[in-house]
Length: 55
Image (tube, rainbow, N blue to C red; front, side, top):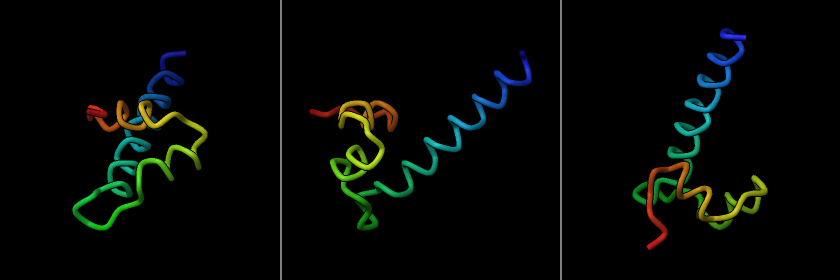
């Protein structure tokens, strides 16, 4: 069970790193609205995963 938990934590960290890389506004990244739609998430969830505020 502990190993599974560690795998989930690693996968979440990789996801957040990859997400931050593709939505980087300084590098003509993917718009957050598009990313949210493709992932089936709300925009506020994507912002939260990036550690950003929607305002």
